Each structure stands twice: as C-alpha cells, then as structure tokens.
Length: 427
Image (cartoon, rainbow, N blue to C red; front, side):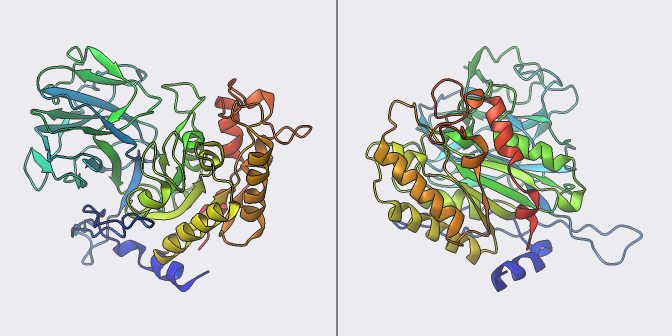
C-alpha cells in the first residue's frame, strides 16, 4: 500500500466537494486535478452532540460526456438515472464540458420516477424538487465546464430511478450529452415543463442523456465509490434497454447485499466507441481521466477496462507497448490521488467482422501484461470469465448478442460476478 493511498483514506472524512472547473489539458494527460469549492461536507450539530459529525457525499451515478448534439432552444429534457446507492439528500452535476458557448439553464428539477414505470416521464407525486445554484434557480455554465447544484432535500433509495429535468430557454449551441444511455429519456419540444410531475408534455423520447453527468447523495450507507472506466463493453452495448443490466449495474446490486462499511457507489464512465490513445467517440481515456475519475466524489477505486477499440479500431494500434504505457499513466495519476486501480483483461471477439490474427496477438499480449506485470493493485480476468474454453479467442455463445464483440445480459452478469469485491475496498 502506498503512502498516498493511506493518506487518502485517513482523510476521507474531510474530502470536499466535486472539482468543477477543469484547467487546461495537455495533449497526453487531459484535465489535471479539479479544484473544489468549499462546503461539500455538511456538519450540523444535533442537540445531543457538542462535536459535529461530518456528513459525507458519495457518488451514486455518473455518465461520461461522449459528444455533442444539436441544442433545442426552448425545450425541456427529462433524463432517467438509475442510482447505485441511496441517501438523505442529493446534488446533480450538470455539464457543458464539450460545448462551445455558455450554456444557460432556465430550470433544473429532480424527482423520483413513478415506481415500476421505467419508460414513463411521470414523477412520483410529491417528489418534485427545484434544484438551485448558490440559491439561484438558473445558471450559466461556461463552455468546457461543469456546475453542481446546491443540496436538494429529497430522500432517494438504492435502485431508484431519478428524473433530472433541465430547461434550455435559448440557443446555447451544441448540447453535451452521453449518446448511448440504454435508457428511455424524454423531451418536451417547447416550454418549461421542468417542475411538472405529469409527463404529458414529454411527447418525444431519446436514448441519450442530455447535460447531466453525475449525481451525489448525502449520508449514503456506503464507504465511497468505484468508477468503471471503459467503452461500449461497460456502457452496455448488447444489453436490454431500460433494465439496467450492464456489468456495473450488477456490481451495484452485489454491493447492495453488503453492510454499509463494505458498500461502494458505482459510477459508470463507459463510452461506446471510446479509446485509450485516440480521441473519437468522446475524449480518449487519457484525456478524460481527470473529469471522469479523479474529480468524482468519494472515489476509492477505478476499474480500467479499455483497449479493445485501440486494437480493433481504425487506425488499429499494433504495438502493445503503447497500450501498456497508457495504463502506466492512468495508474500513476490514480495513485497520486490515493485511488486503487484494478486492471480488467480485454475480452475475446473472434467472429467479429474486424477480428484478425495480428490483432488477436496484440490482445493476448496486453492481457498478459495486465495479469503479470504487477502494475495494477488487483486484476479482474474478464477474458477468462467469458471465453469459450475450446476456442479461447471467442466468447461463449451463451453470452453473445450476435455481433461476437459485445455481451448480452447473461454475459454482463458473469462479468460482474467475476469481480472480487474485496479488491475494490482494500487499502
């Protein structure tokens, strides 16, 4: 255990709020550590206690900014977010990270989705709350930045679907979004319908999340959070929409069965099509590591499951050492912040249209490095969990949705169950 990791966990109770304003990024490193405003730890004093007990924020949901889409002046977007841990209050991180103009949000609200209705824009009666920013109901977010709401007084349980609605009253340029949500979200084409519980105005649907990139909860029954950094294999490609069956969702379910001191919130930072070394669908992992891992709340560990698109994409990375160097960079940056790094082996994909023998050789070489180099604090062998023992360059047929690359619901479950939860919690 490094001294940095020890110090990080000793000071966990004193950690302050999210990093909000990313400084300039270098070509290779991306955003450095974000600077945080005060008051992320609330310490009210009860009548029975003279010494305040820190109340901690924990990350419960995340989505990485993957690109931009055309803005919709005058529209209201209602996003549906599945929470990995509950809490007594919440706050939301809104993003203009990939935008080119200041983003004006005329209203932001949160509510619980009507229970049992994952494809409904209706809010549970009585749960609607208005989110504010330093007490104001509106906010302007500069291009390239995020903003976090004030604490919202709404109790949210584990596994709840949270509705986060944003109204964009005017033209703020391209909208930062997460393209592949695997979740039905809603659009009211005209008007501010943010604080209306009834969803009748939301006449259109979208399968992307707009403007929202994170949710934290207060007083969570958890010891922190873990980030899943990946591509479509983490983002949920191949799974059933509106059912939350990505491997990070299953991981959250496994944590839910544990005592609070052994639970973690699970933050999904997968981007379909993402790469370690090159920008494409979303900033490369090297560039977005600060925003999607280091700046998140209460992070104790990160699972790095990236590399398949570098090997299989265009242009293809043919030198395993380039991928290994990227891993070393990510591990060094995480360790500097006291965060454990768990390396995940790259899964087999023979049968896919772009599979080639030389690319398979790169995959196997990289996997040997992940398993045997000692770089990572622990290893998850996803490759061993899903491969066909008779044809190890392929996944088992029972886990294949048909494209020989992604995983169906059963495959995702097997991957999540291959994770040793203790590896994510060890100091």
